[in-house]
Image 1 (spheres, rainbow, N blue to C red):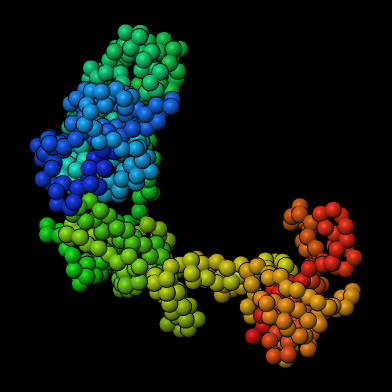
Image 2 (spheres, rainbow, N blue to C red):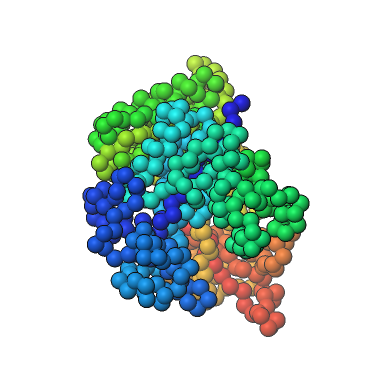
Length: 537
């Protein structure tokens, strides 16, 4: 089994880089970036700093290279910074925008490996075990990744090691280090203790004790360090030395199957994109067929040359085993997008993933017409769901309750089609009107009743939505008591009536409570209220 390899990315200027990218017009960023060092040229421009309020004072939380050259540092009060450099561009910290930018970079890094984890606040961890050879080796992969981020306007530091802690420590000190397996101790021994990214109190305590490098700390007994700084710091130290390990937490679980196509010349036309998806769909289906799998959820990812990533997902009610079905679902989804797919200057990578798969059960389809009909219904539901969303295509399942608003449960059709087909509903008495209305309101609407006979007669007149209706026919009451064993709240017994007004409209009304049993908040008897719960056809 191959030993794990972790690539750590650190973006030390992420807040100011984000602000600079936002302020530049498209096309100026490439001219403003130094392709050799990866640092943005700020000559002739005011230094930028980001401030946050701490202890009733504004202090620097991030700064660009121009501000750093003036001697400004993170944690310096804004008043002191202005005294050193009066010509400063000051921005308020925006953690949400920084997190969104970092997540966008993480999405783009999916092109190298599906195992990408956030390393807050301004870093990423990529598990590149077993995939570096696809990019020409670890050095070529790291250079390609860092070069692309530099062209996008980000200052970046990267390192590769066998553990996340070791790779992270290296990025805080120098860029481009690649540590061979088993050489973590030699690689980090000379690094300052702050590169471990431990708590500030621990770092200060180590320095006061004269332990300035990781090697100095490693040379001391573990029991001494643990007694002073805790077992958690010992675990971090051993991980940095390669003597322990800790898993990373990828943002998304890896798909079951992935196929992709890279382009030397970016593609931008709808026809080429559709042809690419159709080709990838055939390849994906062939790969799943070898293992007897079918796709229930598929995602297509479009990687633009400027770093933006667009992900389009479709779902299927049954495992998909045909490439033309996958192609059709994505065509439906792309045609119905409210925000059309924008290629910008083109996509240089298109990926198709089977995020969720299931084993395919072979069924007799030549003689059993029911199976064929079910397949056609499932395919229709999939196409409609691809256009308008799976949450808008629902089936209704009966529930074991006599409370009207709880008697039916609406669920997505793609996941519950089989259950809906097998569901048993109470039979309707032939020749009799339906007991329940065709349209039932999500919330019963109050009505004003001017006259009703007691104890259990329907109203003679009622007002609903500022219109008065005269009842000419009525059936009922149908008395429904609330399920006291399901809730602690006391609820009133209902008397339901099917009524018809003088114009032929038929309503489903109920009285909430029985006469003589309804009391208000002061425990004083009051009249029960009336509601309309639905409309008959």
